[in-house]
Amino acid sequence: MRKTAASYLRSTKDRSDVSLDSQRRELRELAAREQIEIVAEYSDAVESAKSENRPGFQRLLTDLRSPTRGWNILLATDTSRISRRTYFAHVMRHECEKRGVDVRYSKLPQDLDPITEVIVHSTLTAMDEVHSLMSRQKGLAGMAENVRAGWRAGGRAPYGYALEKVGTGTQRDGAEVTKTRLVRDKSASAVARYLQERAAGATRRIAMDASAVNKAASTLIGIEWNALTYAGATIWNVHAEQLPDGGYKGGHKRRPREEWVIQRDTHEALITWEQAETIVHRLENSDRGKAVSAGKTGNSAYLLTGLLTSPQGGKWWGHRQRKQTYYRHVDANGKNKHVLTNHVDEAVIEKIARDMNSDEFVKALAANARQQTNADDPAQELRTEVVRLNEQISKTMDLATSLDDPAPALRKINELERTRKEAAEQVNALEREHSAQEALRQVTPDGIRKALDTLWKDTRELDTPQMKAALKAFVQAVELNPETLEAKVFYRVSADRCVRMASPRGFEPLLPP
Image (tube, rainbow, N blue to C red; front, side):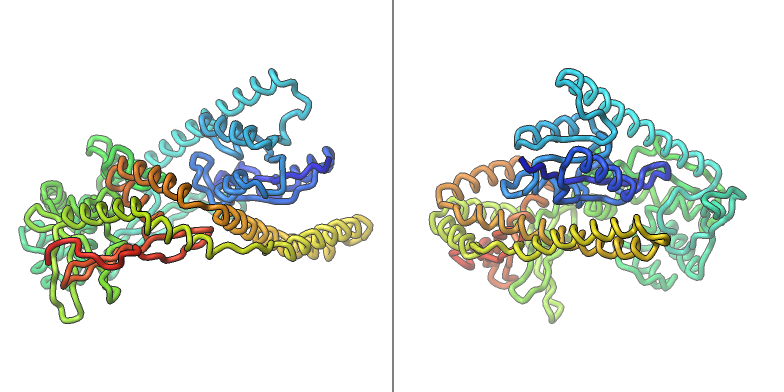
């Protein structure tokens, strides 16, 4: 029986980590020994194994679930390539077993008995997670020490400062290691004047006019949140850990102040420490400052921002006034329209629920889905091209071994390999799309109704940031007319592409105008 495999490669920023080329060579050697043909490759460069949101890994997961994937073995050099999280490593192994895919690692013996294999796999995945945690702790400790020594711990310079590189006298890979610190730039005086005015109690408009710092309100609030930095301190560990699905761990972007690392007098200050404390204290007790901060964390109260438009294409923006939240639209003549967010959100959610329970909507969705199907195999020619390139690479490698100077042949192999990889990626993409289209070909109204019911029940149980992300997966836009407050919802019908489909009832009044 022909043995076909997909290989997965992953490298990180860690200088001691193995390169993609080294992993690829090791897996090819394993495949040659085991008489396995590698027909697909997935790779992620400089990606963390603590997150599963890696582009190559996500393509691997998609193809793993496809009945037309064309391989039944998954090759990786070791367990840490897949994940450094023990739980997910076991889940991934279970998913592969369930779909008849054998996972093999080049750094493990290939003839382990089942009991020994379970013990070895469990031990290695646990060690992978321990290594990940230890690496993180060492990295954080190193960054904290850098801050205490007065150096930046990464990130861009705040407006009014620039980054200056300073040599440390240490060499790495033939180049001097540098660290960065903040120095004033040409905008420093204007920023200092703006912050001094704000500390004295001036409104943002007055402070802008006095300083000529002409920035958007959200940018000005961001400058103010950095007031302690403008007072000459390097601040680190302010922001909470960002979650893969959006938002921040604990629901707040900023950690409690007692967890911050604050090193004063690390660079030239633009304002005094007392002025900075006054500005930060005012922000912490300001509704607008909290709203802007929440909006940037993905914890905003505005469920439909990014989805809500006017029929003319204008945007509706989130707006807070007197402790109320609104969606605001400004037309070409500068006319404002405000609608309470909870009124719009509830009306749109109710409309989506009605659509999903509508026979008319289900039939329209089924018809729209079937229109996307294509019976022909779109990857046939490219698949033949990949086979031809594999043969050419093999012949060129044989030639290289017989030459006194193999360099030209090796360069040709690299060129062919790049072409083969691009073609293979196109094959994978086309096969995914074709597989999705084949699934759509079999779709029935009953199947769609059950799927919609499950989707909507799951969505309604999410909090606001998660629901916002979920809505964007199946709602492309909501057109809300500022004059009549009639609305139309445009849905996504996807087979690895987005097709715009409106609610079959078209525009409906959502709210009294």
